[in-house]
Every structure is written in structure tokens, then in C-alpha cells.
Length: 85
Image 1: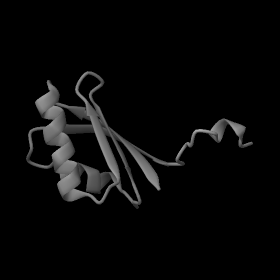
Image 2: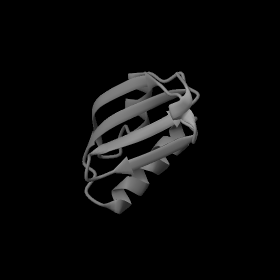
Image 3: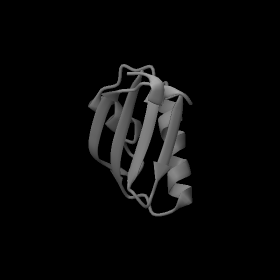
Image 4: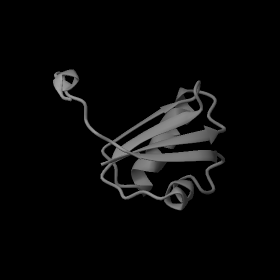
């Protein structure tokens, strides 16, 4: 699984967050998406593989601008994950 952190310019309210989340759900296969207009970012978790161009294309023509994409492996953290070493 992969985690994608997307820096986005143009989100100003909760409706913008919902709109961005809907665009990503419509254009990418993912497990979870969460946006924050205050932070100016969206966090996507899914099977991937994801590429920067794919993420940018999902918002193409929407009025939101992708300012950065960070793709990292995602490991689900369970309740007792602190015991694993």
C-alpha cells in the first residue's frame, strides 16, 4: 500500500475539501482520502501504484492546483504496533 500526500492550492473551505475528495475518489482507486483546507493538503491511502502525473490529472480542470506530491509506502498501524520492533 502507498500513502500520497498532495499539497493543493485553492481549497478555502469544507466544501472545497469534499470536492477534492470526490475528484480523487472518481479518478483514482483508493482506500481512504482526507483533505484539509487549513493545511492545504490531501492524504490518500491505497493499493497504488501511484505516480505524480496521475495525481495531478485527477484535479485537472477543477481550479485546484497541485503544488507537490509525496509518495511513500504505507504500513497500517494497529493498536499494538508499538510492541513490534
